[in-house]
Image (tube, rainbow, N blue to C red):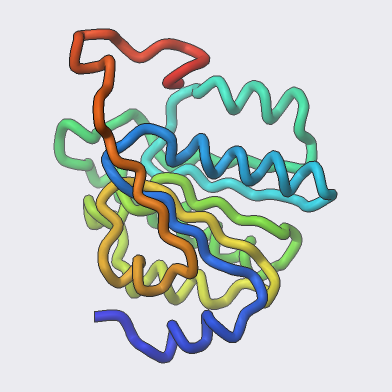
Length: 183
């Protein structure tokens, strides 16, 4: 159960909370689209990638062309098909702590917590711990949260919730992830 005081405090803030969840493709892509729009209007963007530690193509584009955006990965390899290790849990908890410090510092206008719902699903940290961090941001900071399996408490906390629903996916035909498209 989410502390309703946090929800009330959230609604007093000017910045809104976006949540992109569901089993369909496009959650991180939607967050990056919003980041691109924010960067185009002169805003600074910080992206914390939980669970991810692999070299995704967007990292090359961001580091090469978008100096006002910082991306930090707080994952190792993908453990989604097995249980997380102690190292996976430690990486996620370190990421939440560091992201909390950066949120409080207020140096960025938009914060993306990519795959934070997966971190919650695998109990790398709790919803209560996440909400404590999120409510300490500067008043006008925009938050974008992504990942499958968003818990109801996070849905209640968000101002905008979009569910990406898979209707059909070429992975079902055996197609493997392709560089520049899926990673």
